[in-house]
Image 1 (spheres, one colour):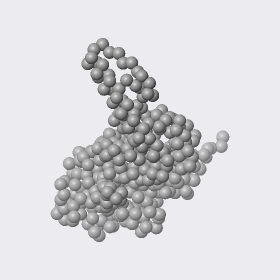
Image 2 (tube, helix red, strand yellow):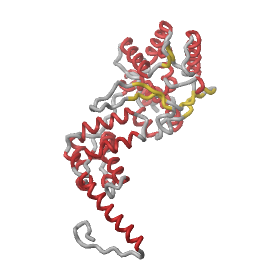
Image 3 (tube, helix red, strand yellow):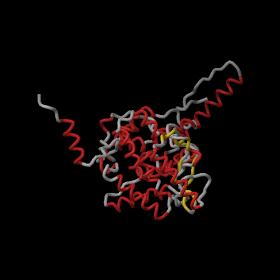
Image 4 (cartoon, helix red, strand yellow):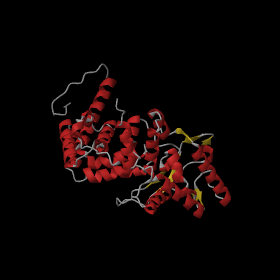
Amino acid sequence: MTDKKNKRRLIAKGSREKLDNAIIAYYKDMDNESSGRKITLRAFYQTWLNYKKLKTTSSMYIRRIHNDLEKYYIDDPLIDIPLQQLTYDRLEEWALKKIRTCQLTKKQYYNMTIIIRQSLEYAVQKNIIADNPFSKITIDRKLFCNNKKPSDETQVFLTTEQPLIEKEAYRDFHETGESACLAIPFLYQTGLRLGEIVALKESDITGKYLHIQRMETRQTQQNPDGSWNTQHYQIVEHAKTNAGDRLVYLSNTARSILELVKQNNQDHGYYDDGYLFLNANGRVHGRSVDTRIRKYCRYIGIGEKSSHKARKTYISSLIDAGVNINEIRKQVGHEDERTTYKNYCFNRMPQDETESLLEKALTHKTI
C-alpha cells in the first residue's frame, strides 16, 4: 500500500483481523485529512454553530457570535483557507494583525476568537483535523488596547440622584398602580440583574432572604436569509452562572417594597403563576423596567442611565459601607471578586462631597 506521500508503507500486525483494522484506520485517516484540506472555516462555520446552539439557551449569545462573524471573518481571507492549512504560525500572525488593525481590548479579542478557537476544537472532535493550533497561541497583554474605565457619574446614580429617581418611581406607582415602578427602588436595595428581578416569584422569598434561581432571557431566531426575527422573552429555570444561583439579603426597605407589590397585586386581582412584578397583562418584562428608569432620568434632568447602573450603584454602596468584598461578590452573583472591583466599583459622591472627604482625610492637627 502507498502512504500519504505516494510512498509504500509496510503495516505489520500479529493477526489478519488486526491487519484489516489497521488498514481501515489508515484509509479513514487519509479520508479525514483529505476532507480537512478541502473544508474551510466558511464551510464549517454553520456545522459548528448548530452544535454550539445545543449547548446554550441564549439566542442573543448566538446572535453576538453571528455579528462577530460578519465583523471580523466574513471578508477576511482566513475564512477560505482549508482547516488543515491553518497552522500555528499562520493563526498567530492573523491574531496579532487583528489586535492591531481592530484595536482590540483583551475582552474583545477573547470574544472575537471564540469562532476560530471553538470551530477548530470541534473539527478535532469530528476527526477532521488532528489538533487545534489556536489553543497554543498566547498574546502578551501589553499588545491589547487599554480599556479605559468610564467616568463615575456615567456608571452609577450619585447620592444626589438616587433619592430623586426613587421619589419619581413611587409617584409613578401611586398614579398608575404599575408595580414595574417599584422594581426600580427594589433594584437599589438588592442589586439584582434586570432579568432576575422580573422573574421573581413569591415562593422565592424566605424570611430575610431571596432565592435567585431563574431569569428572563431575550430570544431571537435567525431567518434563512440571514436576518433576525423580532425578539421575544422567556423565563429559563436557571441563573446566569453557578454563582448567580444565590441567596440575597432583603433589607427592611426591600421587604417593605415586596409587601407593597404583593398588596398591589391583590388589590388589582393580578396573578400570573406566582410572579411578583405584574400588570393587567401578567408578568412585566425587563424592558418595561428599563424604559421607566430612563424616563425618570429625563424627568429629573440627568443623562439617561440604565437599570444596570442601579446594580452598579448597589455594589458601590456596599463597598462604601465597608461590607466584605467576598460577601458582596456572593450577594451579586459574581464568580470572581476581581469582576466586582474592576467593573462595579465607582464613586457615588458628587464632586463637592468628594473634595470634602479628601480634605477631611488629608487634614491633620499641627503638633
